[in-house]
Image 1 (cartoon, rainbow, N blue to C red):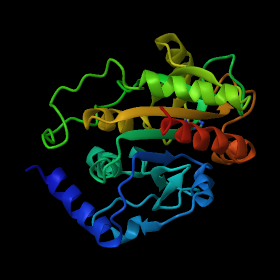
Image 2 (image 1 turned 30 degrees about the horizontal axis):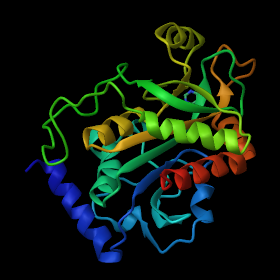
Image 3 (image 1 turned 90 degrees about the vertical axis):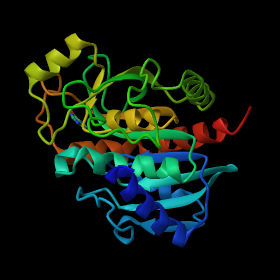
Image 4 (image 1 turned 60 degrees about the horizontal axis):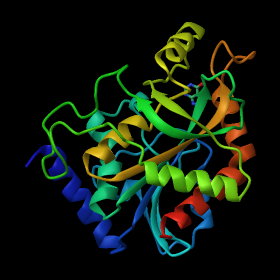
Length: 276
Ligand code: HPA
């Protein structure tokens, strides 16, 4: 057994001491989007700090706990706050929460994030359904001993973002009249925002949005056999497209401004996952 799997087993035992809840959907909430967890009738919560060995997020706006509950009969575990590479965590630690939620029983991972708009047609406050990602600009997070208990050494990535789930999200957006862009998300490590030259490079590579999370979690979930989907909240135009300097405050402000609509889209999409 790998060390990574041993650690996961310990974390799982810690959570199982507190709740026997088996989620269908795992939901990761990005910067400024955490309030969705307050809308669920929580049947249990588990603070990351109470899980032995669990990486605790240091970023303002990331709460640091699992919330268990249901949206319209669909059982959900919400990660209210995630951990990032730029905080100094190893790839193994960044992937641990996603893998743990898979071990709790989740079959679907729903990713959300705040992202910069690389596509010039995108405006701050837009939502983008993630159709695919680019993760190859830093070391692959699955490098190292493969966790055979979770998935294969060479996982297929030809459809990371499940077509059927994407179609349900598109239908949900249409039903509630919520404008929805679609595009490719590129993950960089951060914590610097990009330079304008880097943003031009990303555009040339085919990216529509850029951020500091998500693709690695999607890859870990796909490795573990989960169905994956994700929506970016475009909180700002990327550097060089935006006429003003970038800041975490701007990211937070935009995310907060559009959060009610974003929450509606995510919640109703999850409910639609429970329908045939
Ligand atoms: N770049 C990277 N990450 C981000 C951005 C950005 O412009 N906006 C929100 N997260």
